[in-house]
Image 1 (spheres, protein in one colour):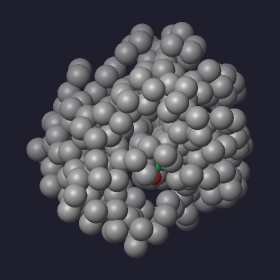
Image 2 (cartoon, protein in one colour; image 1 turned 90 degrees about the vertical axis):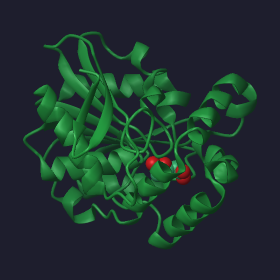
Image 3 (cartoon, protein in one colour; image 1 turned 135 degrees about the vertical axis):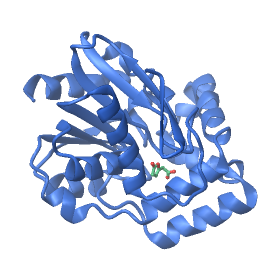
Image 4 (cartoon, protein in one colour; image 1 turned 30 degrees about the vertical axis):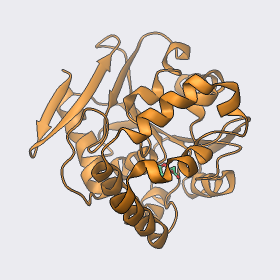
Length: 260
Ligand SMILES: O=C(O)CC1=CCC(=O)O1
């Protein structure tokens, strides 16, 4: 299945690997789509069933009018799991994808086996900050703030060392619909998973890029401590370590998958 429609919203899904493989599902960050994981996937162990999807308002998925809530977004992930018959899912969520993973783990513990929190937190930023970003995007478009966003996505020097990859990321960000981006900003503004994440019972691993300016190491470590998760800092990476340091991320994931 490459797509499903739920409540009038069509979601784009990639379901790869053996049907009977261990299920790993990915939640993408704000302004990115399922291509975000392409650098990482070749470094993952063989035999996994890899589920990627474009959250609403991103990639090929529909872009209903915002604002969205974190429950809307985790509800989409749950609908995909139910439609594909997925259970024992290891969910790897990056940034807003990590908020989706925390919310999904709390709402639908029957679906998940383990959780990886990548460059994320129980609460990211403040409502004021997100409302200002929403206003800017609605007035002038994502491209008007993309330089600042991209500066947080990567460690210093990445753009100069990898200009083509940097350009692809800029294209992915700027070509997404403003409405979908603003809708997801609203979901982040309204999300506080602190109490829900404190109560999580499943195995959790947290990691973040050492140079992440969006969800810095101390913030991510604080969320890891809420649920007794192990915490790892990835050198020479900003907000998207799966893209910038895929081998280091894959090594941590392989070890976690072996133990859970
Ligand atoms: O745009 C950023 O600052 C990075 C980011 C915050 C939440 C998310 O998903 O990405």
